[in-house]
Image 1 (spheres, rainbow, N blue to C red):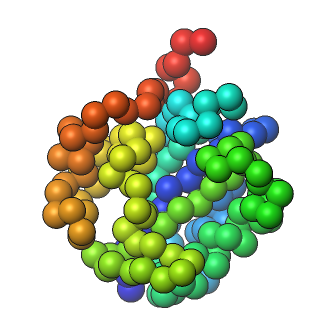
Image 2 (cartoon, helix red, strand yellow):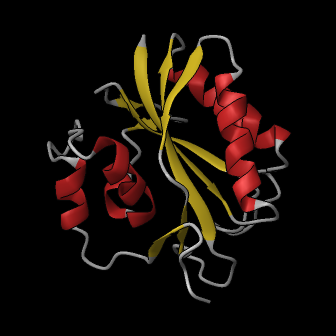
Length: 168
């Protein structure tokens, strides 16, 4: 069994519902067990700012699947929940749901379609804040820093609020 950390994000439609459905769909797959889910956070869009705020969370799963097979499951869930990567014209643009493998055990994987650890996880408050909640002492296998230290090192983090606490 491997442990994977998966980032979930949504900023179209029922954002919270898409995240909740993603968690359930992951847990319903044979060979995957969701063992922990962070709280939900509202987060400022990164990159392309002219879009709705996101809801983000992190799940920790135990899995018998390889990282590549887990990536296929994540892509299938995105598709089943309405994401069409082919039609997405704007990098970091709006999406019904996004599932990213952030870490897979302490492995370093680099293929043409999968990069683990996620290449920008250490730069994104929307990933690090939920990770702080459930895995603050996890050590990034490349950077050799804890999630807490990576968060402390952020120079200009995007805004992140516990879901329901952001004032509009």
